[in-house]
Length: 236
Ligand code: TYD
Image (cartoon, rainbow, N blue to C red; front, side):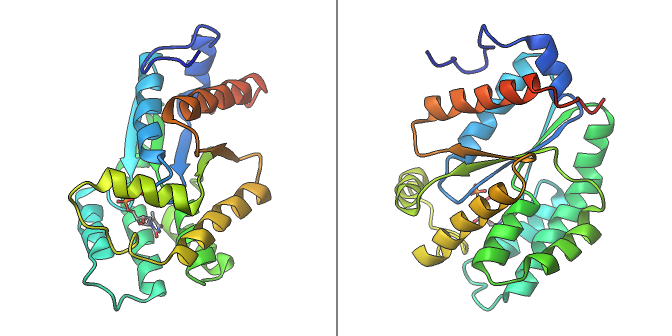
């Protein structure tokens, strides 16, 4: 059976999960059309229902300054933007988000749930866009300092399924500048995420996102419960 939204599955030790999630920095990431944002909302509700104080942030944006940077990044008229400019703008938005929202929330013991983070830049501007991972990491260290996520959940989906979901989800709105890139680009994005998962399995959690949302959510919760049981120490 799959757990209904915002309820705690009976097998979940709520107290332990609350301690595990409080003060933790968790990123949800994956290709466009992976269903990550749906899972993000659902997971945030599930954590809050267990008494965890949750701060939700999204990238690019999440602050008044970041939202202005987001508008530049996603504007389809900005065809001339080169990949270095793009990478620096994503990082600039992130630097503002970190100081204005993420760091204070962690200091208060909140679970910070971020929709995208440095892992997106490594996949989109790195593996797919052609920038070296080391160059991106150098800039990331300037933008975020030592504050790295505790868990990075990657929702993995094939390009064809992703396109179908994006077309269905978009209804009347036009695709943004990133969504307009080629299938080959999006396939490289996917491979970029999978490479990151392989390189750092302790921090990354890959979830097969081709299934229906209920199945994906149940697996996500299961994965968190088993990580918690594995005794990964809470941060606070
Ligand atoms: P958004 O509408 O927020 O997409 P989603 O709901 O899929 O997160 O658009 C963000 C777009 O920006 C998305 O195509 C991924 C891309 N992106 C990068 O290329 N690099 C980055 O560092 C980040 C954070 C996002």
